[in-house]
Image (cartoon, rainbow, N blue to C red; front, side, top):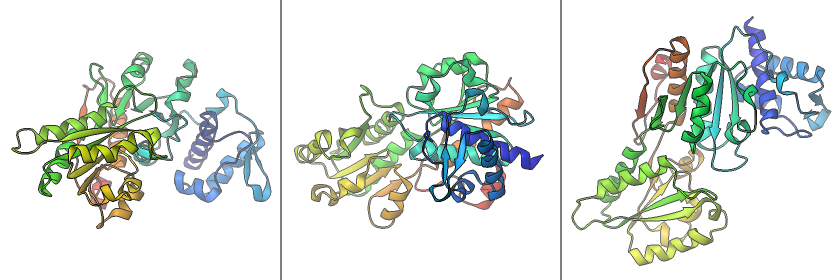
Length: 365
Protein backbone atom coordinates (compact mmCIF):
# COMPACT_ATOMS: atom_id res chain seq x y z
CA UNK A 1 0.00 0.00 0.00
CA UNK A 2 2.86 2.33 0.84
CA UNK A 3 4.47 1.71 -2.59
CA UNK A 4 1.21 2.40 -4.44
CA UNK A 5 0.76 5.65 -2.55
CA UNK A 6 4.28 6.84 -3.43
CA UNK A 7 3.77 5.98 -7.08
CA UNK A 8 0.48 7.87 -7.17
CA UNK A 9 2.12 10.88 -5.52
CA UNK A 10 4.74 11.01 -8.28
CA UNK A 11 2.11 10.49 -11.00
CA UNK A 12 -0.09 13.26 -9.60
CA UNK A 13 2.85 15.62 -9.22
CA UNK A 14 3.91 15.17 -12.85
CA UNK A 15 0.32 15.66 -14.03
CA UNK A 16 -0.14 18.72 -11.89
CA UNK A 17 3.05 20.30 -13.20
CA UNK A 18 1.84 19.76 -16.76
CA UNK A 19 -1.60 21.20 -15.99
CA UNK A 20 -0.08 24.22 -14.25
CA UNK A 21 2.29 24.97 -17.13
CA UNK A 22 5.50 24.11 -15.30
CA UNK A 23 6.10 21.31 -17.83
CA UNK A 24 5.13 22.18 -21.40
CA UNK A 25 3.50 19.90 -23.99
CA UNK A 26 6.13 18.78 -26.56
CA UNK A 27 8.77 19.48 -23.94
CA UNK A 28 10.49 17.03 -21.62
CA UNK A 29 9.99 16.12 -18.00
CA UNK A 30 13.19 16.16 -15.86
CA UNK A 31 15.47 13.09 -15.90
CA UNK A 32 14.74 10.25 -13.48
CA UNK A 33 17.61 11.20 -11.19
CA UNK A 34 16.34 14.78 -10.82
CA UNK A 35 12.79 13.60 -10.10
CA UNK A 36 14.10 11.15 -7.51
CA UNK A 37 15.99 13.91 -5.72
CA UNK A 38 13.22 16.52 -5.83
CA UNK A 39 10.41 14.12 -4.86
CA UNK A 40 12.57 12.04 -2.49
CA UNK A 41 11.54 8.69 -3.94
CA UNK A 42 13.33 5.75 -5.57
CA UNK A 43 13.90 5.23 -9.29
CA UNK A 44 11.54 2.25 -9.16
CA UNK A 45 8.75 4.54 -7.96
CA UNK A 46 9.46 7.17 -10.65
CA UNK A 47 9.58 4.55 -13.40
CA UNK A 48 6.29 3.03 -12.26
CA UNK A 49 4.59 6.44 -12.38
CA UNK A 50 6.09 7.26 -15.81
CA UNK A 51 5.10 3.80 -17.13
CA UNK A 52 1.50 4.46 -16.15
CA UNK A 53 1.48 7.92 -17.77
CA UNK A 54 3.05 6.46 -20.92
CA UNK A 55 0.30 3.83 -21.11
CA UNK A 56 -2.26 6.65 -20.88
CA UNK A 57 -0.60 8.44 -23.80
CA UNK A 58 0.40 11.50 -21.77
CA UNK A 59 4.16 10.81 -21.79
CA UNK A 60 6.39 9.14 -24.40
CA UNK A 61 9.92 7.85 -23.90
CA UNK A 62 12.15 8.83 -26.81
CA UNK A 63 15.61 7.42 -26.22
CA UNK A 64 18.30 10.06 -25.83
CA UNK A 65 15.76 12.86 -26.09
CA UNK A 66 14.32 11.75 -22.75
CA UNK A 67 10.67 11.46 -21.76
CA UNK A 68 8.46 13.82 -23.77
CA UNK A 69 5.05 15.23 -22.91
CA UNK A 70 2.80 13.92 -25.66
CA UNK A 71 -0.47 15.65 -24.77
CA UNK A 72 -2.19 17.82 -22.18
CA UNK A 73 -4.02 15.60 -19.67
CA UNK A 74 -7.69 16.16 -18.95
CA UNK A 75 -8.33 17.90 -15.64
CA UNK A 76 -9.91 14.79 -14.09
CA UNK A 77 -6.86 12.69 -14.97
CA UNK A 78 -4.87 14.61 -12.38
CA UNK A 79 -6.68 12.93 -9.48
CA UNK A 80 -6.40 9.16 -9.20
CA UNK A 81 -4.61 8.34 -5.96
CA UNK A 82 -6.18 6.50 -3.07
CA UNK A 83 -8.41 8.69 -0.92
CA UNK A 84 -6.82 7.09 2.15
CA UNK A 85 -4.18 9.81 1.70
CA UNK A 86 -5.04 13.42 2.50
CA UNK A 87 -4.18 15.93 -0.23
CA UNK A 88 -2.62 19.37 0.28
CA UNK A 89 -2.49 22.14 -2.33
CA UNK A 90 0.43 24.58 -2.12
CA UNK A 91 -0.55 27.67 -4.11
CA UNK A 92 1.65 30.75 -4.57
CA UNK A 93 0.67 34.09 -6.09
CA UNK A 94 3.89 35.50 -7.53
CA UNK A 95 4.46 39.08 -8.68
CA UNK A 96 6.56 37.70 -11.56
CA UNK A 97 4.55 36.22 -14.44
CA UNK A 98 5.43 32.64 -15.33
CA UNK A 99 7.23 32.12 -12.01
CA UNK A 100 8.23 28.49 -11.39
CA UNK A 101 6.74 28.07 -7.92
CA UNK A 102 8.55 24.93 -6.76
CA UNK A 103 11.89 25.74 -8.39
CA UNK A 104 13.03 29.30 -7.73
CA UNK A 105 12.89 32.07 -5.17
CA UNK A 106 11.18 32.26 -1.80
CA UNK A 107 8.26 30.13 -3.02
CA UNK A 108 10.53 27.14 -3.72
CA UNK A 109 12.04 27.25 -0.23
CA UNK A 110 8.59 27.46 1.35
CA UNK A 111 7.43 24.60 -0.88
CA UNK A 112 10.33 22.38 0.15
CA UNK A 113 9.44 22.90 3.80
CA UNK A 114 5.82 21.93 3.11
CA UNK A 115 7.02 18.99 1.02
CA UNK A 116 9.23 17.74 3.82
CA UNK A 117 6.32 17.65 6.28
CA UNK A 118 3.97 16.12 3.67
CA UNK A 119 6.42 13.29 2.93
CA UNK A 120 6.91 12.50 6.61
CA UNK A 121 3.15 12.41 7.26
CA UNK A 122 1.98 10.66 4.07
CA UNK A 123 0.15 13.59 2.49
CA UNK A 124 -0.20 13.91 -1.27
CA UNK A 125 1.20 17.35 -2.10
CA UNK A 126 0.25 19.38 -5.17
CA UNK A 127 1.69 22.71 -6.28
CA UNK A 128 0.09 25.42 -8.41
CA UNK A 129 0.91 28.99 -9.38
CA UNK A 130 -1.74 31.50 -8.41
CA UNK A 131 -2.17 32.86 -11.93
CA UNK A 132 -2.92 29.39 -13.30
CA UNK A 133 -5.16 28.39 -10.41
CA UNK A 134 -7.41 31.43 -10.86
CA UNK A 135 -8.10 30.36 -14.45
CA UNK A 136 -9.72 27.16 -13.22
CA UNK A 137 -13.30 26.49 -12.15
CA UNK A 138 -14.43 25.12 -8.82
CA UNK A 139 -12.99 21.79 -9.99
CA UNK A 140 -9.62 23.14 -8.88
CA UNK A 141 -10.68 22.31 -5.31
CA UNK A 142 -11.62 18.71 -6.13
CA UNK A 143 -10.44 16.24 -3.47
CA UNK A 144 -8.30 18.89 -1.73
CA UNK A 145 -8.19 18.43 2.07
CA UNK A 146 -6.09 21.50 2.90
CA UNK A 147 -4.54 24.59 1.31
CA UNK A 148 -1.31 26.47 2.04
CA UNK A 149 -1.35 29.84 0.27
CA UNK A 150 1.43 32.39 -0.09
CA UNK A 151 2.57 35.28 -2.26
CA UNK A 152 1.31 38.78 -3.04
CA UNK A 153 -2.24 40.24 -2.96
CA UNK A 154 -3.42 37.33 -0.86
CA UNK A 155 -6.24 39.28 0.74
CA UNK A 156 -7.88 39.50 -2.71
CA UNK A 157 -7.89 35.72 -3.13
CA UNK A 158 -8.28 34.30 0.36
CA UNK A 159 -12.08 34.81 0.55
CA UNK A 160 -12.40 32.23 -2.23
CA UNK A 161 -10.50 29.66 -0.15
CA UNK A 162 -12.38 30.52 3.04
CA UNK A 163 -15.75 30.20 1.29
CA UNK A 164 -14.75 26.77 -0.01
CA UNK A 165 -14.67 25.50 3.58
CA UNK A 166 -11.28 23.83 3.00
CA UNK A 167 -8.83 24.29 5.91
CA UNK A 168 -6.35 26.99 4.85
CA UNK A 169 -3.07 28.32 6.27
CA UNK A 170 -1.30 31.42 4.95
CA UNK A 171 2.47 31.17 4.68
CA UNK A 172 4.93 34.10 4.80
CA UNK A 173 2.26 36.78 5.24
CA UNK A 174 -0.24 37.95 7.86
CA UNK A 175 -3.77 38.33 6.38
CA UNK A 176 -5.28 41.18 8.37
CA UNK A 177 -9.07 41.21 8.90
CA UNK A 178 -9.43 37.62 7.69
CA UNK A 179 -9.88 34.73 10.10
CA UNK A 180 -7.22 32.33 8.88
CA UNK A 181 -4.08 30.75 10.34
CA UNK A 182 -0.71 32.17 9.29
CA UNK A 183 3.03 31.53 9.72
CA UNK A 184 5.37 34.36 8.72
CA UNK A 185 8.98 35.43 9.12
CA UNK A 186 9.34 38.54 11.31
CA UNK A 187 10.33 41.03 8.63
CA UNK A 188 9.85 44.05 10.89
CA UNK A 189 12.48 42.69 13.26
CA UNK A 190 14.77 41.99 10.31
CA UNK A 191 14.58 45.67 9.29
CA UNK A 192 15.48 46.72 12.84
CA UNK A 193 18.45 44.35 12.90
CA UNK A 194 19.66 45.75 9.56
CA UNK A 195 19.59 49.29 10.94
CA UNK A 196 21.48 48.21 14.06
CA UNK A 197 24.16 46.55 11.96
CA UNK A 198 24.58 49.75 9.94
CA UNK A 199 24.95 51.82 13.13
CA UNK A 200 27.49 49.34 14.49
CA UNK A 201 29.58 50.00 11.38
CA UNK A 202 29.57 53.72 12.17
CA UNK A 203 27.00 54.69 9.53
CA UNK A 204 25.09 57.95 10.04
CA UNK A 205 23.14 58.07 6.76
CA UNK A 206 22.25 54.49 5.71
CA UNK A 207 20.20 53.91 2.56
CA UNK A 208 17.42 51.31 2.42
CA UNK A 209 17.09 49.82 -1.07
CA UNK A 210 13.45 48.86 -1.60
CA UNK A 211 12.05 46.66 -4.40
CA UNK A 212 8.94 47.00 -6.58
CA UNK A 213 7.77 44.30 -8.97
CA UNK A 214 6.57 44.68 -12.57
CA UNK A 215 3.62 46.98 -13.08
CA UNK A 216 2.54 46.93 -9.43
CA UNK A 217 1.68 50.35 -8.04
CA UNK A 218 2.46 49.33 -4.47
CA UNK A 219 5.24 47.85 -2.36
CA UNK A 220 4.47 44.37 -1.08
CA UNK A 221 3.51 44.32 2.62
CA UNK A 222 6.35 42.05 3.76
CA UNK A 223 8.85 44.37 2.06
CA UNK A 224 7.27 47.40 3.70
CA UNK A 225 7.62 45.71 7.09
CA UNK A 226 11.39 45.48 6.55
CA UNK A 227 11.47 49.18 5.71
CA UNK A 228 9.37 50.20 8.72
CA UNK A 229 11.55 48.22 11.09
CA UNK A 230 14.63 49.85 9.58
CA UNK A 231 13.39 53.44 10.01
CA UNK A 232 11.88 52.79 13.45
CA UNK A 233 15.26 51.56 14.67
CA UNK A 234 16.92 54.77 13.43
CA UNK A 235 14.29 57.09 14.92
CA UNK A 236 15.54 59.21 17.78
CA UNK A 237 19.21 58.44 17.16
CA UNK A 238 21.09 61.74 17.37
CA UNK A 239 22.85 62.74 14.15
CA UNK A 240 21.42 59.74 12.29
CA UNK A 241 18.91 59.77 9.41
CA UNK A 242 18.04 57.14 6.83
CA UNK A 243 16.99 57.34 3.19
CA UNK A 244 15.11 55.01 0.87
CA UNK A 245 15.38 54.38 -2.85
CA UNK A 246 13.02 52.14 -4.83
CA UNK A 247 14.37 49.95 -7.61
CA UNK A 248 12.08 48.18 -10.07
CA UNK A 249 12.49 44.46 -10.61
CA UNK A 250 12.43 44.88 -14.40
CA UNK A 251 15.43 47.25 -14.24
CA UNK A 252 17.67 44.78 -12.43
CA UNK A 253 18.59 42.82 -15.56
CA UNK A 254 19.68 45.91 -17.53
CA UNK A 255 20.95 48.28 -14.85
CA UNK A 256 18.84 51.05 -16.40
CA UNK A 257 16.04 53.21 -15.02
CA UNK A 258 15.70 53.08 -11.24
CA UNK A 259 18.91 51.06 -10.91
CA UNK A 260 20.85 53.61 -12.94
CA UNK A 261 19.50 56.42 -10.74
CA UNK A 262 20.78 54.68 -7.62
CA UNK A 263 24.34 55.96 -8.07
CA UNK A 264 23.20 59.59 -8.27
CA UNK A 265 20.93 59.09 -5.24
CA UNK A 266 23.89 57.83 -3.23
CA UNK A 267 25.84 60.96 -4.08
CA UNK A 268 22.93 63.32 -3.36
CA UNK A 269 22.10 61.81 0.02
CA UNK A 270 25.66 61.18 1.16
CA UNK A 271 24.75 57.61 2.12
CA UNK A 272 27.47 55.77 4.02
CA UNK A 273 25.88 52.29 4.20
CA UNK A 274 23.32 50.34 2.20
CA UNK A 275 20.67 47.74 3.02
CA UNK A 276 19.59 45.37 0.23
CA UNK A 277 15.99 44.17 0.52
CA UNK A 278 14.57 40.83 -0.65
CA UNK A 279 16.04 38.98 -3.64
CA UNK A 280 17.68 42.00 -5.29
CA UNK A 281 20.70 40.64 -7.22
CA UNK A 282 23.16 42.66 -5.18
CA UNK A 283 26.16 40.86 -6.69
CA UNK A 284 25.65 42.96 -9.84
CA UNK A 285 25.33 46.16 -7.81
CA UNK A 286 28.38 45.40 -5.69
CA UNK A 287 30.52 45.50 -8.82
CA UNK A 288 29.87 49.25 -9.02
CA UNK A 289 32.78 51.12 -7.36
CA UNK A 290 30.34 53.53 -5.66
CA UNK A 291 28.65 50.58 -3.95
CA UNK A 292 31.47 48.11 -3.38
CA UNK A 293 33.14 50.40 -0.86
CA UNK A 294 30.02 50.91 1.29
CA UNK A 295 29.24 48.81 4.36
CA UNK A 296 26.26 46.66 3.39
CA UNK A 297 23.58 44.46 4.93
CA UNK A 298 21.40 41.96 3.06
CA UNK A 299 17.92 41.10 4.38
CA UNK A 300 17.10 37.65 3.04
CA UNK A 301 18.59 37.00 -0.37
CA UNK A 302 19.21 33.93 -2.48
CA UNK A 303 21.07 31.06 -0.74
CA UNK A 304 23.51 30.57 -3.62
CA UNK A 305 24.51 34.25 -3.46
CA UNK A 306 24.84 34.18 0.31
CA UNK A 307 27.23 31.22 0.07
CA UNK A 308 29.49 33.12 -2.30
CA UNK A 309 29.50 36.15 -0.02
CA UNK A 310 30.08 34.19 3.19
CA UNK A 311 32.92 35.80 5.14
CA UNK A 312 33.66 38.24 2.32
CA UNK A 313 30.87 40.70 1.72
CA UNK A 314 27.73 42.20 3.25
CA UNK A 315 26.40 41.05 6.59
CA UNK A 316 23.34 38.86 6.15
CA UNK A 317 20.06 38.63 8.03
CA UNK A 318 18.70 35.27 6.95
CA UNK A 319 15.29 33.60 6.96
CA UNK A 320 14.92 29.83 7.12
CA UNK A 321 11.98 29.71 4.73
CA UNK A 322 11.91 25.90 4.66
CA UNK A 323 11.28 26.05 8.40
CA UNK A 324 8.44 28.55 7.85
CA UNK A 325 6.88 26.25 5.23
CA UNK A 326 7.24 23.22 7.49
CA UNK A 327 5.53 25.02 10.39
CA UNK A 328 2.69 26.10 8.08
CA UNK A 329 2.19 22.47 7.03
CA UNK A 330 2.25 21.41 10.67
CA UNK A 331 -0.48 23.93 11.51
CA UNK A 332 -2.57 22.78 8.54
CA UNK A 333 -2.18 19.19 9.75
CA UNK A 334 -3.55 20.23 13.16
CA UNK A 335 -6.48 22.09 11.59
CA UNK A 336 -7.42 19.20 9.30
CA UNK A 337 -7.56 16.96 12.36
CA UNK A 338 -9.50 19.52 14.42
CA UNK A 339 -11.38 22.19 12.38
CA UNK A 340 -12.59 23.88 15.59
CA UNK A 341 -9.15 25.11 16.62
CA UNK A 342 -8.80 28.85 17.33
CA UNK A 343 -6.98 31.03 14.81
CA UNK A 344 -3.18 31.00 15.21
CA UNK A 345 -0.69 33.59 13.91
CA UNK A 346 3.01 32.86 14.35
CA UNK A 347 6.06 35.05 13.64
CA UNK A 348 9.43 33.34 13.17
CA UNK A 349 12.28 35.51 14.52
CA UNK A 350 14.87 36.92 12.14
CA UNK A 351 18.58 36.59 12.79
CA UNK A 352 21.99 35.67 11.45
CA UNK A 353 20.99 32.01 11.61
CA UNK A 354 17.97 30.26 13.06
CA UNK A 355 15.45 27.54 12.42
CA UNK A 356 16.27 23.87 11.99
CA UNK A 357 19.90 23.98 13.05
CA UNK A 358 20.26 20.41 14.26
CA UNK A 359 18.99 16.88 13.80
CA UNK A 360 17.30 17.16 17.19
CA UNK A 361 15.28 20.19 16.04
CA UNK A 362 14.29 18.42 12.84
CA UNK A 363 13.17 15.27 14.63
CA UNK A 364 11.12 17.28 17.12
CA UNK A 365 8.81 18.35 14.28
